[in-house]
Length: 79
Image 1 (cartoon, rainbow, N blue to C red):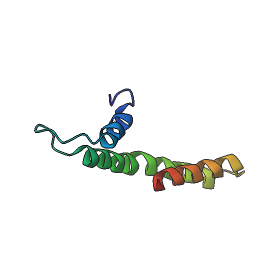
Image 2: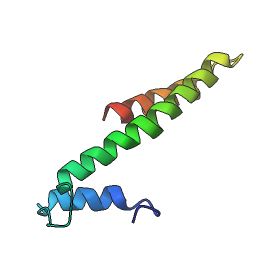
Image 3: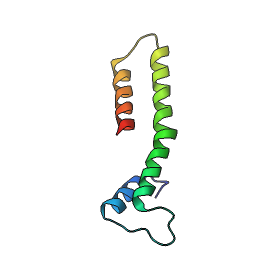
Image 4: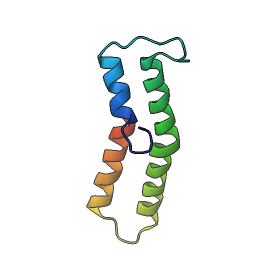
């Protein structure tokens, strides 16, 4: 599920359906989803936003599309 990008949907389904933590699982479904979201934010969303801001600041001409892209990235990080 992780390799095809289905894990967030599966985690959300497990949390929404009230799935219980099984004996072989280290975390509850809610904790697993929370940890995965934190890892995704720290190691993917924030660095990509930093690269976007760097590209915008180093560009000779500032594009409205680039600014909107950065704002959308910031909104998704905050969400």
